[in-house]
Length: 388
Image (cartoon, rainbow, N blue to C red; front, side, top):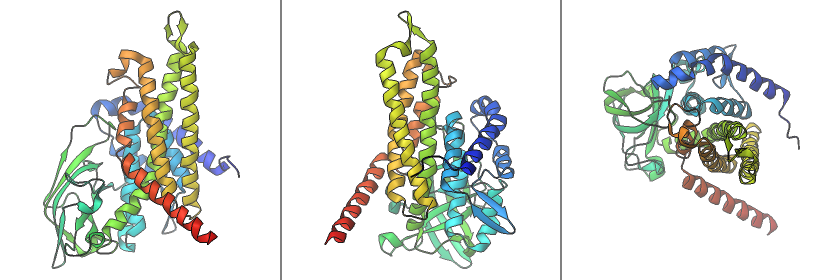
């Protein structure tokens, strides 16, 4: 069992860190002030092949899960809000086409998305349907030559800046619950699409947008995957996306921890640096140990996916553990800065808020515990069957 990162993965991370130093770090203050990430960043990342896929010889190849996780962690150490913009482009939008798109859809959407020329997001959550994905109300009515979509997607990250969205809708209302939904690639400039950017205080500078669909015509070739399999497809997208969001959440924790630890070594209270007090040094030791444990879970989940193994259980455990530690570490770090941490422009302010947001993306903590418990029961049943 080798816990060292493969040399090519380590070199990929080193190159990405240099990219961040040149193209992200100098611009963060402006992006936060404007509360927007420019398309030019995605375009630059596409040119540098940092968007999860490589185009070569007319084909397309997906990058390994571990490579992508390390990039997500490094970016989130600087800004979870910028990291989520990249995550949505790669792991929700492009990934959906990679998993379920036709060859024509891959040429028309995935290839330009990998180059950073086309932005694509996911529209699934609705005002009355979040964790219970099957309860969405958006309708897709079959008409000659395509589908008419009507409904509202409540909270779609990147939807204000994206060109297309993968939209889940009820295509077969009389079918069983798990066969009612289909998935569609919707041009967000189409007639009948309205977008409203929402006012939020997490994952700045990304956008969170409401998508209103009013008799939006999607041609037949806009159906992504199989009719009636939209629920399975979106859940599979979420399972895959739990790997980069776990790494992103770990980066959130690491970024906050490094800020807090540095400050605690410099700030003096009662005549001594804060870190000299045993209570604070013990807290740091505890949090660091648990961050490393969460990191191992993230790496194991990525390893399982890269080996072609079932990774659903590991992905949910990684998501659950990283959210737990990010919540605690970011609050701990903010406390060390005292009143200064409540100022929105302070570097540590974003981390507790963004850790809160991470607990909601790709399934809440309760959803992760439900998946973990089911996975545990399945493993126990397999073990009992093998011993029978």
